[in-house]
Amino acid sequence: MKNSVLENIFISTNLNFNKEVIKINSRIKYISHFINKVNNNPGYLYIYLNDEEQLYVAKIKTISSKRQNDNECIKIKLGGRYIFINYQLNIRSYSTQILKYLYARQNSHNLKDVKKSIFMTNKKYNFQFSRPIIDEERLHKDFLNTEKLLDKQDFSNSILYKGLIIPPKEDGNKTYAFLIEEDEEHFLTLTNNKMIDLDLQYINEEYPQDLPPYKPYFYDFYPSESQKLKYLLSGLSDNKDEIFEVNFLLEEEIDNKENLIEGKVVFSASPIKRINAYIESLIETKNPDVIRKIKELKNNTKNKIKTEDSQKKIERKIMDGLIHKGNKFENELNVYNVGQGNWSKIDFKNHITKEKIFTIVFDIGIGNNAPENVHKIAVDAAKELNGNYMIMLSHWDQDHIKGIIHLEKEQFENLWVVPDLPKSNVSTGALRLAAFLHFDPFIESIFIDNSFNNKVIVDNNYLMLGKGEGRNSGVNVLRGRSTIKTKYNDKNNLGLILVIKNDQKKILLPGDCEYIQFPDKFINVSYNFFVASHHGANTNIKDLSDVGFFKVAKDTKAIVCVGDVKDYPCPVHMLMLEKLGYVIEKTKDIKSNSYKYKF
Image 1 (cartoon, rainbow, N blue to C red):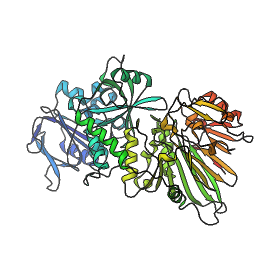
Image 2 (tube, rainbow, N blue to C red):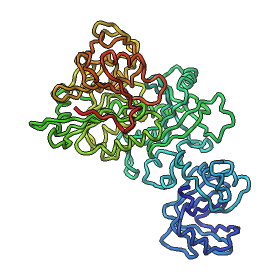
Image 3 (cartoon, rainbow, N blue to C red):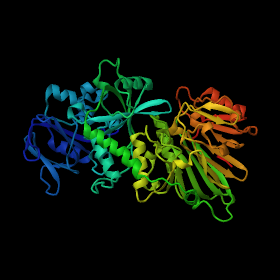
Image 4 (cartoon, rainbow, N blue to C red):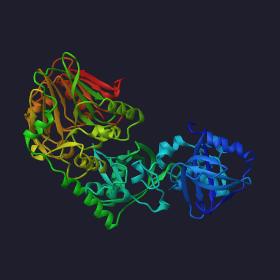
């Protein structure tokens, strides 16, 4: 156990520990030896007030038999001797749920058994004193590690209740949710009153200066069975924008899982945490203040962001730094293996010196509810991002933007080129990122206006940037020789599409935009490398050549950004690409962090 060597102290009392001496009956025989052990490996102080059912936590600095005037401390009488426990940070109140991760030393072999934790044993025996071991690994996995719980400068403490991602019901703090659909999967995007107020203060430019700097974050529930959640909510309300109050149960709190919706709560501000949880209840909120604030949050974010409709301004900003007179490039594309998500990077290098001149990142996503190995790849990909670069987002689905949780603050401080926000079905995480890109004074951002739908925005010797037509699913559109019904939603089809050029070579990065929603100039092209649209999803297209796509040279590669997700990639989609001559690669099959292509 990583932190088993730490000397922690648990005290249970009804006294005012700031003013009164806490008398403890203990079997400790050698007080001096105990003091030395704690001072050699100081851990954490946990004080539980029985009557109030309140828990206070602090980092131990030292303990001694004499008071040190420059330290915060509490005074206890232990084995007939007065002891002063000095702590480093102001003692803070947290949920008693944290006691589920503390175990008396004689129960150290039962670390995974909550029934043996101090949370349970103190209720049964009501003891005064313990030198507990912390199951820090499980605490860190489920919630926050203890250092972050105590750090006032940690942003997560500004938006969570008592450091817990799932607040206990008995504390009366509510979690709110609304349904989001992305790639035909449904999940709950979550928030709470602290988050709502802080997000509103940020977009209204009233963010408190005494808090840690604001940063975008994600807070969501991903069900194991998406359709189960959809059916439950459809039975509660016909309004897609309905706001719900949701209560979650943890694994150890339930005896019968039948009829409960299982999934994971994912929280990214600390950094990312994933907790197995079950929906206990989901009801429409009747709180008019919460409804008003969430509506204000959505509307103000969209209304305050100004979009750009000038082609010249967009091209000038994008090309600044890329074009140097006489530049010839040797380019390298990296398509990262980030599960069911998209993250690509194009390095423009001097063709002689191989020095990197400029980088374009096109999408910076990771798969929703991605496993730990995917996050390790994303961390490495973020570390590679330096020098002169810009970031483009194809659209606002989380699997194309969520990699931002692995960026340092200064890595945001470049040019971002993004589409306008969609009118509905936007996660709270996407809204926070859009607000951050717009309001942060150190970030330059271009939000592409929807007047560019189905148009080419930039086209020169280095790149072509366009925007999808933006039709929703189920709409008949004419492309090439065929009239075909759209399959993907408007969020996908409003996306940006990028082609990178070098001499006669062209590579395509379409995000999730449907092929029949491309501007024509992106269709009638023979590509040298092709990233399949929408993770190789099912489509109503039968043959890409009927739409207007050209056949390609032998051994031309097409890559599909895909994780271990059912029904992806669609065999019909793959067959269409193979008919054009492409050789299919899948990111999940590559052995390295990314698939590389030089051109």
